[in-house]
Length: 406
Ligand code: MLT
Image (cartoon, rainbow, N blue to C red; front, side, top):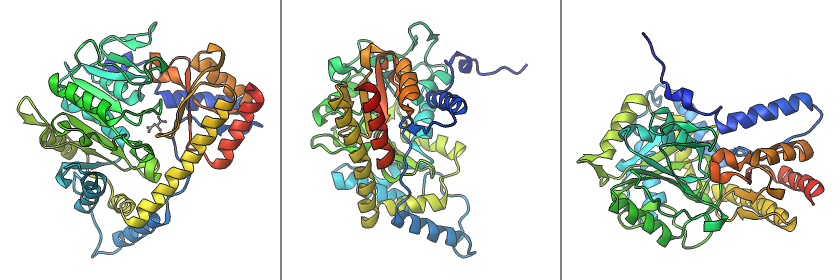
């Protein structure tokens, strides 16, 4: 008799951003005259840049000619892209990462959800709290998180590492020893970062405890301050304990294009098995490669022009971050992030719950944000706004917030 994967039944509600989308749709239906500004999900608004578009057009034309047509892409990615990534993102920064250690994919969300498959189900995960929900949900689907405690809104078998204003959003090492440690830096949702010495301490901790760090660097392009590492491989020993996930979504605006990559160094060996070969096996079995046209677009990101253009995108969004941060601070809000990340993390006014503030902001200012509690229990009484809107909408959202919360 067929049985379902009962772990899915343990998952609370729907995925955070689907819940928000449903709530906003319901609000729109009952308030069709209201113009809603969406600063909720971290989705970009600026179009693809000219160099990237030109590369895509050329690749489209190549696909229309018998001589240049391409079928299945290599499972692990075309070497033209893997070489460009290794050179620009790693070797130029002094990180010894080889193109062969780079696995091209259709985005960091898939990779961050799938990577847990190569680990035993008995592995215990540790996550910062608040945290990008995909890490926990994907492990819960695999049955690694125990049961969901509805009252406390936590999984019984997950090690949560609270990151709040009290510890300046720098989590302490957990009391229980984890096997897999998820770190997202610059952090989604809090927008904070670690200094190099702080990240080095995590690498040392992982090596000492024979744990693996799953390092999500999707927001790396937003780092502006010195002494903030752009890759975990800037730390000594990271090749032996860390997998890094990267995205083209937030730096180059590929949220609708889909491209990402994961780095699995060949020195990362667990129980005598290199994780590189396990991930290659998984990738080769379940994935037929990111499309040629998209990988050519990714390659264009690494040209001089491409790099200049994507720096322009990042600066544009960071201007929004400043508008939001300064605006909220001037209204007396307690505000974090927005310096090395496109997210602003604020304390809700009057100690409102995150979801109450979500409703209040939507009803009064017609602005959508993301409730902090959706990212974990320590996100309660916090709220996230994204800097990925247009300048015009960001300013308008701030004006509305000013009118309603002065
Ligand atoms: C977010 O809003 O946290 C992200 O955009 C979600 C994602 O990247 O999947």
